Length: 436
Image 1 (tube, rainbow, N blue to C red):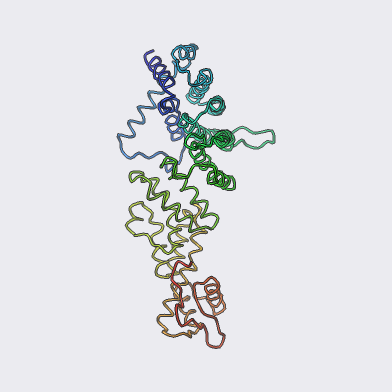
Image 2: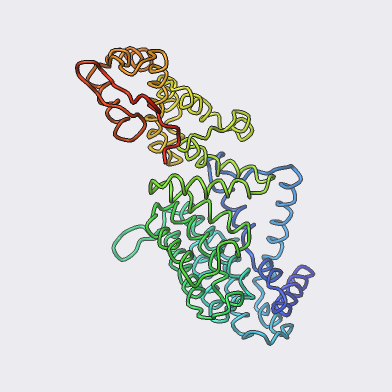
């Protein structure tokens, strides 16, 4: 009983104070910890389970979950909403909409405790719908928290059941369903035509977009992710720097990954470097995730991360790649790609790393040029280098093809003569990297 009244008092107080700050109310209606705990309990792959920075953090997290489950019987009481209504004195927002929001949230919580995740998803979606009818900028933290919880609940629905089927007989993807609900949040924020940007609902847009980003990458729908970027970076929106720094870090991380996917490695490097530098030092897991995509971008710009940095974040997969690109060692480069192929493919960077091979060839052939000390180099010299580095089956035709590719892409200045071999430019034969 004491837990019930303590919960009601805390919830009603946060509602009554919502016009001053919505953070407490957002935390009170949050399902994040319970959802995270439940997902970790279901997921069988230990690599996907939540990691804790300390034993104390794990204990604190368990205590919070226990406090939620203690409320289970209280939340099933029929008088929970009437008791809450009596304690609400706020007049800043429609009280009934606030009560509806809390009602659906409580129903969702009870459904989660009953392992009825699909029904919980439906109730949380209704909670968001009730919330949108009263949304104003001061309630942005509530919107962000609701979108986060809906994404987690969508993931929970997908991994815990075989899933419903729609009218076409296809399995329902609850992450996709979550984006449809979030899109209503997104549309609500961008529809505000307030000319005074600090007071515009558009200031809440990035927090919603980041949750949608995470889903679009998971379901591999990058076209929709691109549309989100086009919207928030268009005229009439607050500058990116005006958003909360943690949200901006997440945004630049995903926009950088999208730029890399589209082949714009320079922009990708800038976005990911910003995200890495601004990411808090104690967020080791997040900084490692950023580095996985930043390192290939740095290498394409011929910027080589220190071995100590890779060791610090346990990214040994890149150690030999970095050394191979720097030294022009084709053999080590190929071996590393093959050894860690599954990791690179899983992270979506295998093809990006494979494109580094032209730089490896460039650095190898530059060494041949230095050894030859002339402007006319027999093709056979390059064949010997490739046979030593790659395989014995390399012939003159294949070598000429590689040289022609280097010349075409600007990594080598010169031309191929079938009489004398490779004729290089007398100055700046191998232009400085990265190429402009």
